[in-house]
Image 1 (cartoon, rainbow, N blue to C red):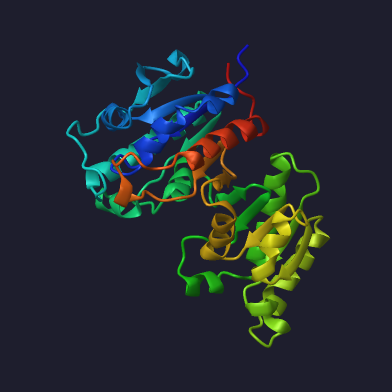
Image 2: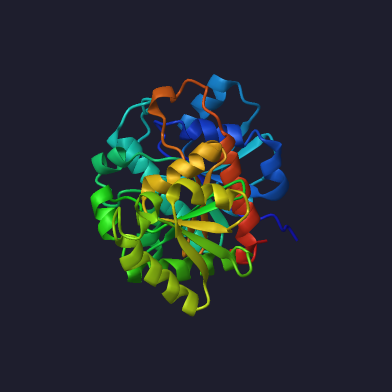
Length: 336
């Protein structure tokens, strides 16, 4: 029986570097050793980029996931019907591209919920294109949450030995600070422990990043650490979570990358993103926890400035597929 997990790979915004990094990833030998990858998307942007880059790939259109060949040299494509057939212009925000990207995601979720996919790895989308297309959700995480009935999906970044969770993500900095509360932080730590355990990490050690410089210096530079974070950590520890901190954000990520902690809880979007991307921009992978299935993603954007030029790096896309294959068995049994 075939034991490689089946990973659905969404094409992302077809006006972006999404088609290019997906096609280039399918030219990589490593992904076929550990996964059965299937693209969820449309043919035309793939045909254009395969020709532009001279990739040694044959496009294999399939009607069902079970028809996929999953061998190097073949890009198995499950095409999403009903999308505009006219060509999408590279590198521009377009409503039809936003709609297509949304439909790719929706189809992948449908297949994963039906048990036909073991995991989903996503290429980048554009929030403005979503808005132009009338998509109500702001991004990937919100779409996956709503369409799977998951109230609050938990994002984790993985870069080499560094894992980062996020207390808040797509909020203004002012609103993110207001969301740093004792109850939210305690709940997040419990969910972090659950997610890490599900990924196979026993008794995970979790550090909490501070909000203020020098962790507030006992109230000299802000009191959120004393008022909200320390009590939350004590609450979580009383419930069996090996949480520590808060530690100054200018050092805690380095400490975790050095092996002192299994993960860091970042308090807001850029705090954790900067740390991960400085460590290794191309190999940072986003993992969404709390869904009924595993979802991984590249951690970079649509890069419209280089879309259609054949110069985009597929390293993060390859890493997202490899991570999906590595962790999928922990989420549910692989499909035959």
